[in-house]
Each structure stands twice: as structure tokens, then as C-alpha cells.
Length: 63
Image (tube, rainbow, N blue to C red; front, side):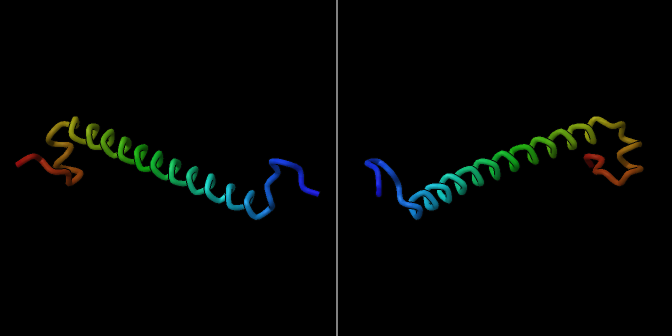
């Protein structure tokens, strides 16, 4: 016996997959943004090091 406004099991599974894929895409984008932020932060730290230290670790000296 189905009630008015009820969903079949297959439509609920489909709705969960759609919302799950949306959530996965949001999480994926957030992960990309976090990784980019960490990379920029690491580059800023390396570029702030004295020239001699950057040479010692093999980092670009800007020449």
C-alpha cells in the first residue's frame, strides 16, 4: 500500500546517488582548494628563507 507522496525504493536510491555525487564533487573541490592553499603557504615560507638557506636546500635563488 503506497501513501500519497511516498517514493519508491528505486527513486530513493537514485536521489541518494545524486546527492552523494553532489556531495562528492563539493568535497573534491574543497580538497583542491585546501591543497592549493597549502602549496601557496609552503612556497611563501620557502621564498621567505634567506638566500643561502635556499641555495643549500636546492631551491631557486631567483637568478
